[in-house]
Image 1: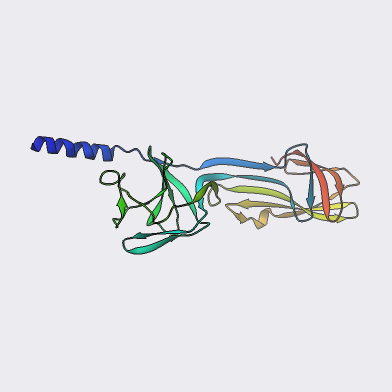
Image 2 (image 1 turned 30 degrees about the vertical axis):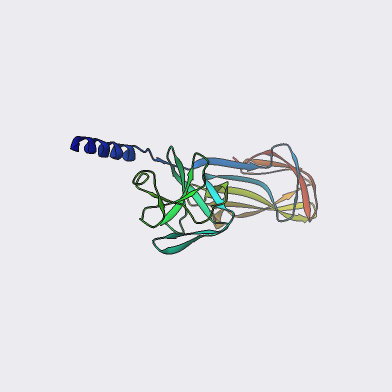
Length: 229
């Protein structure tokens, strides 16, 4: 009998400890607009060509406020809050929010309603066995409503370039070139430039080439021939 109890207890420990937690790493992305050789229009002050490199995470955005109780304290999940996918298991995807590290949202892969996950014990715990990979899963008082989205990480290895139309004076077109590193404008890399249309309809900067089709002091029609190097 004692050996049977010990065997059952050992099986529980093995099953709880056997859950594989996959830490989510950000995805690298590059965004460039507009398309090459496509006629595009823009107003003064708008970006003509844009390039962004960085990392992004899978995330969810809450579409309806809801609440639950954790250790006797009322917690509110606000509409518009963003939760970022931090790790996954075979059973759940786990999303956390830096504004409150006490809890997060666990979305079952089975398609069932989302749960709250937390490291602390509290009333109303819904668990698989004793716990789930050291986490307690709690049924919220209300259904958590959300949609899938993405969040860009602008604090690490983030870089952006843009060229802005700044108007026309006679035959001269004015532009502003800007770079951003980790979401901060780099003053040393913000530059005003001016081009003489009487010399050429093609303008260039750092490998980028744009063909000017028509330009006034309020808008410009153009075509991107080459992107920034």
